[in-house]
Image (cartoon, rainbow, N blue to C red; front, side, top):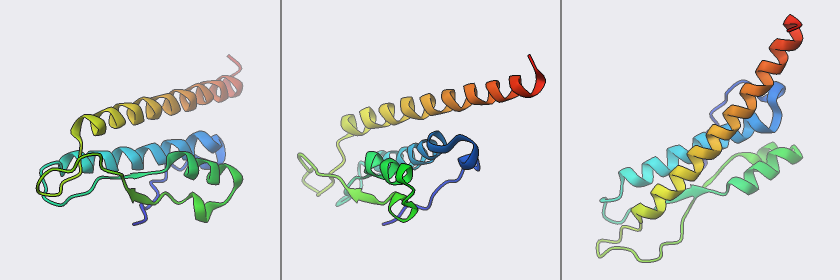
Length: 121
């Protein structure tokens, strides 16, 4: 299942960091969906291969760079077939949120540098 890209509109100006922001946004959405379905019988958690999608975007391969959600391997599904391990999903969410924040910080620094260059301060 392909995840539609969430465009920030900053791609040309901020390059890889903007793509990273888009991918982390998609990943956060998937993980939140996994957590929301932690009690749904038969539900299997999904995630994206962030590193592969980012590498593809970096090389300019936009078709491959479209993040596709893939089922995650489940260590121990519940009796009803649900494969969501809440603690693992919460850790993945925290990791993705930190990476999202780092990308935002980098873009913010770039904006401050551009603003400084324009204003001469």
